[in-house]
Length: 234
Image 1 (cartoon, rainbow, N blue to C red):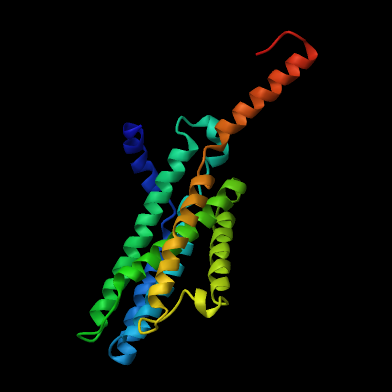
Image 2: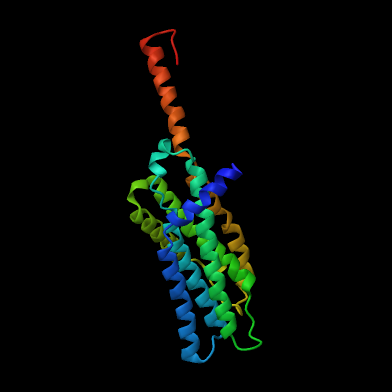
């Protein structure tokens, strides 16, 4: 299995659609630089907002890396679908979080000296946002594997819909406080609770559907043979 993964890495690196994520990374960095040049520095409250915007955009565009043209034709490839999809997920998540880390480093560089920034809590938000975007894309790609970009866009739309819903939560469940808000520690305990949900969704969406289909097909054929020819089976 390890040998298969190593052999698969190079072709997957070429096959993954990196362009949307690359443009999103450049846009995130450009917005930070523009904000710093406009105001002379990035204050803490702006830094939190910029980091969150970057996480949302990068999470949405990371889903384009999950579009797998071979996903609906698993029987013709020796590599199981779940291996390809988890490798694509790892590559896309790693690239998105790496780009977000670069944006955060830019934000820190433009912060006035001595300005606090709770980077660990922001990283928790970023990981959850990226996994949410990937899980939405993974579900869309599983349901509509032949639709390619449309499936990835559907995943991005699902992510933004979920994030939009959080804007209407009550004060006790508010997930987007600023650093000086007393709700900050409570909100990030909620983020920690939410983190496993997209991971579970990814685990379900990245399963090898072909294996289950083959088993189901064999079972149905076996039942049919038993009904037509009693006493016989596959």
